Image (cartoon, rainbow, N blue to C red; front, side, top):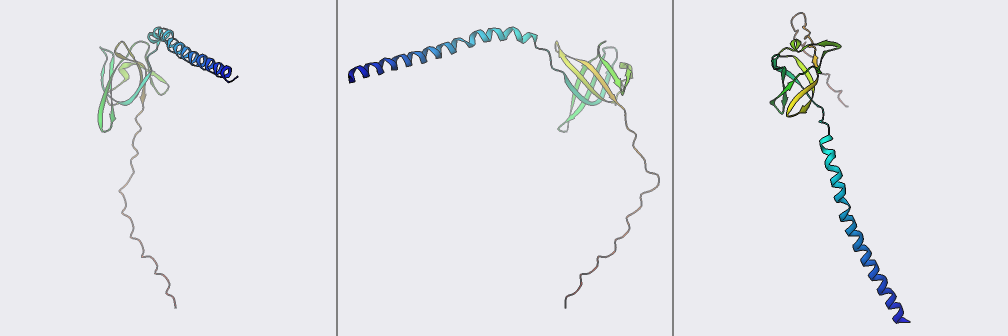
Length: 154
């Protein structure tokens, strides 16, 4: 009886080991077709829309480009963006043209990288807020009265 039980346990052990090794081989073979499916999807991926906010350094109406400078960690970073017929140039709710963009304007440009060029989708010109000037000279602060002394205990 003991011999029969030992043989049954040994056979079950052999089946368990072989089934585990077959399952591992199937998992290794399964990802290969998945990789082939993923490759065609890469060219379909759309370029991400990027955004830069800064000051206009240069406008080239002939080449239809705008150069925007923004400060990153105390260093000026320039981004050259091409403007095409699809680009929306707005100042508030008013539609503007590339000729309305001036050097020194604060702008926010949303663009995509297409064939190695930054192509603008939209250019938002921010209106400069006039600084409020105070009328009259600044008055010097009045001297403060001395603080009261604490009461003495008896």
